[in-house]
Length: 573
Image (cartoon, rainbow, N blue to C red; front, side):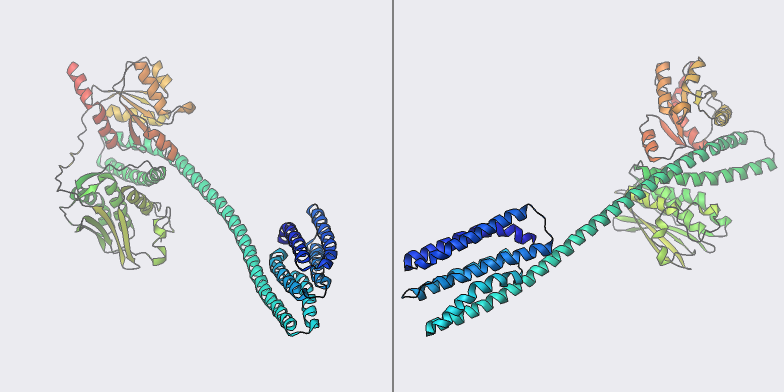
């Protein structure tokens, strides 16, 4: 009905012009002056129709009521057009006049169908009264030409009804499709809204998870950081055999806990997007040898055979990240192998190098082979054996491979074991590397170090450790507290990132450097794993170390930062 109301006003104007022009033409050409009596009736009908349409435009009627009004409009128009044939005067021009009227009314009927909104009942109400009187007049004339014209008009009515019924079916199908499309659009909009809501909830849950991991990791790292420093300092004292054995076991437990926290740190760094590969060509043998020295004892303690084949291949990648990937994969293989062993081997395939880790472990069922790469997902660890980690190993491997643009594939059969294959780009030329020398802890006698940390246990542990290395160590809980000591500029600053009162390590370093008037080398130590905090720390122009701190890592960075300055101070003394 809305389409009928929209199309009818211009249709009334066109019909008025056609009716008026046709009657005037017939009256003038064929002297059918009686037709002029029909014209006022028609014009009055059109005027009433126009007034009705104007009134309908101001009102909102129910569809059923509006349909009844349209029946009256089209029905009255059809009756008036059909009555035009009754005004034709008999005479020599009457047949010609009837033929002209047949043409005009037929064309008008064909043009009226779109105005009915493809409604067959409305069209019939207009078309049948318009053409039926013409048909009757032709048959009543009884001559052969008139009868033939009557038959033609009947056939014309049949054709119009056939085309109108098909057009109505097409219109109804179009309307059905439109309704279905509108319903589909509404459903898609609702689903899109629900998906956006679910995505927002998932992103918020991910942010909450990152914040929780950051807070929990930081709180756990503080005591573990102090514990590691105290154990390192204790190891430099005189201990008997039993005490040394207990200390070694304590270090093993501490190292295990540090490994779990390190997994959280790696995961958070990947989540923060701060892992930037430092690509270079390097020989794989050095990495393979280091991992064998580190992990073979762990495999042997579980009754497993660890084999690593020597290789002369070199790759172009980040050696630190590649080592971390392989360590996680080998650790995973050892943890989930009960008998047999683990084999690590390299082979060349075109311009790629495959590093393969094979094990004879429990294997992974097909339904879990995608899930194992998700964070915190583990198979067969209901007892939460901490030796099997937190379920982050393969998730970290996936993130590191993504950062390196390296391919990782897996083949696994339950009860038969697994094969993990890391594909790395082959180095353009052979690489010969000198092994890294082991750290020789020499006393940095002339080095003065200022430690800024708000945790008294960490301050004391750091003081004891640095003193055992021969450093002159001063401690403070903030930059302001350090300035109150009134000491000259130290050779090195070791500053915790998160201090009291919302002060950060970066801010403390800036304050101290401005006060001392020189760019004192600095090390920032942090236990934070929040992605935004890691990105902020990365922008600090100082060395960055993570809690729990390994003494070797601290010593190595100290030598890099102040080793040359130490020699200068020693010479001056």
